[in-house]
Amino acid sequence: MRNVFIGMVFGILLAIPLTGLTANSDTYRQLDLFGDIFERIHTDYVTEVEDKDLIEAAINGMLASLDPHSSYLSPDHFRDMQEQTRGEFGGLGIEVTMENGLVKVVAPIDDTPAAIAGIKAGDLISHLDDEPIQGLTLDQAVEKMRGDVNTKLKLTVLREGVDQPLKFTITRAIIKVESVRSHIEGDGKNIAYVRITTFNEKTKNGLETAMKNLKQDLGDNMIGVILDLRNNPGGLLDQAIIVADAFLDKGQIVSTRGRHSRDSQRFDSRPGDLAEGKPIIVMINGGSASASEIVAGALQDHKRAVILGTKSFGKGSVQVIIPLSGGREGALKLTNARYFTPSGRSIQAKGIEPDIEVHQFTPEGEQRIGLPSEADLRNHLEGEDEADAPDRGDAVSGAVIEDVPSEILELDRPLDEDVQDYQLVRAIQILQDMAANSTLVQDTISTQAN
Image 1 (tube, rainbow, N blue to C red):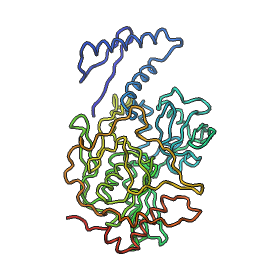
Image 2 (cartoon, one colour; image 1 turned 120 degrees about the vertical axis):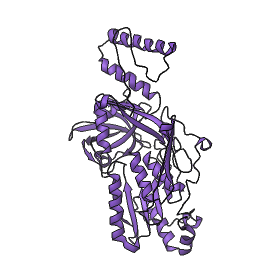
Image 3 (cartoon, one colour; image 1 turned 180 degrees about the horizontal axis):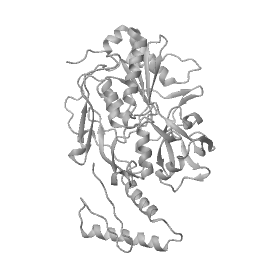
Image 4 (cartoon, rainbow, N blue to C red; image 1 turned 90 degrees about the horizontal axis):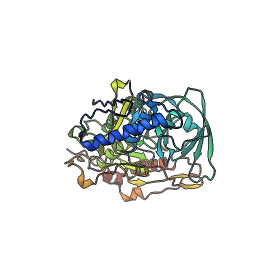
């Protein structure tokens, strides 16, 4: 793992190791300028400012100018990140980003204090304990949202379609994320429903256990699988690869391409399909990001699944975590590559378009809430054009599900008035209609390619 070291000599001169940097006169002049400004602030600012705070602010400003996902992780934040990937951490239970100086909710995590209180994807948090967020960095805002378990935090939220700011008082808790949940769906109790809320170290075992139990309970009655990735903000790349691999027998899952050859990789699937060739519907929305998009994109390109819902978030960039001084000084989170789906599509700032666009409904009508997307974020990377993507060869060979017949896509049976999750009901309908119409099923399900 590459290490980055920054050394500061306080005074008029600033010395920074220039490993890997072209040390020309312009570079040194700019570093001298930085040193002069630092010294002026250090000695003449109206109030005394900690040198550590100034340095961290300078580092964060430099990284924020690159893209929204590169950042410096202080030692505390680095530990928090490590805890989060293990599936247990303290806080409110929301995945957030920054937009126009406010904290924007990408997705609340199921069954956490934020989700239970009613925080929704797309909410803008403007105040914490009545103190405005404007002027804080994302890391500073996140730090204020963290705190001791059982302490309260008041959030002021701006929500699209609501005239007045909303007030929420939320009690912080230890967030234990069981990333996989499952149950049986359908009128005939014959559909395996699996929801993945995040991709952490528990996801692989959770998925394998869920599918094993569902197949035991359903037996020969199982007609298909619904994989719900809505409001899943992503997580660990290796876990996304494992989930996609679980439903693919062969072919590419995802590839990465960066500035250097060492950052370009290709990940392929291995034999074995937990769904045993049965049809799969993957549900996504604007809160489905990063690792979720890798899974959806792979299954879509291989025509192994039908993607249902609304366009995903569009985060198709790769970040590496580089511990500084062994982690004692925190870590650098740096964007170093882009993702590509098996067919060579760039997810970045584009997202995954569903095969079947279904917006959520409530008793009041259709909900078309403007969720945040990668393309909305300041300094976001552009996605590469497909023509510029590396050659993928026969990456999408071995498809199991061919194009879904239009007769099925056009089916729109009326729903009961008390339906709470219209998208899920539509997914159930499609799987049931495919199973009920043997002619369409024969046209839809192909044999596994040799």
